[in-house]
Image (cartoon, rainbow, N blue to C red; front, side, top):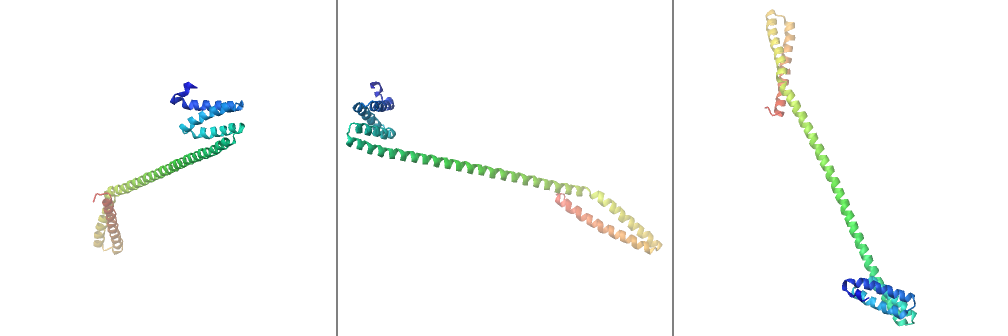
Amino acid sequence: LDYLEEPNLKPRRLHTLWNLGKLRLEQQEHQAAIDFLEQALTIAIASESKQYIYEIHETLAQAHKCIANYKLALYHYEQYHHFQQIVFSEKSKNARRGLEVTYRTESARREAALLQQKNEELEHEIQERKRAEEAALFASQAKSNFLATMSHELRTPLNSIIGFAELAELELNEQQNLTIVEDVRRIHKNGLHLLELVNDVLDMARIESGKL
């Protein structure tokens, strides 16, 4: 085992000594087993290998019990239980820390996924509102443009009707045809009223389209 004295080979030396101790114990070479196990224990304590420490103490307790050295057997059993509790406590703490890290990571992942979903929903809602606003604006502009460009087409026939009604009223007055004159006056009056309404609508359309 001399070649295993190098510091970087100490873990291998520890493992080898422990296995040799267990082998000698199985072969009932109790003192040889104790010698190997004591060397292994020294290395384990120096390297703070708690897992090895409590397992070596257990094997040493068995070896001393076999040679009826109950005092040392009891000592090693006590050390075995002491370090076993330390190791299991550390494993439990590490497992708990691992679970806490996993929980926090999973919680963060769920929160990130939820935030991403909300952002996507908000982006979708913004896009929908934008499209609705654009559609409403387009419809409003189309309406305004339509009414604005219809100014000439709507006014011209009305002006013609009003003009003909005025001429007809003059001629009928000269002929003193009062019955027809009243009808023509109603045409003239309603034409003027309709023209006024058309002018108001067209003015509103021009205001909406920015042309007034």
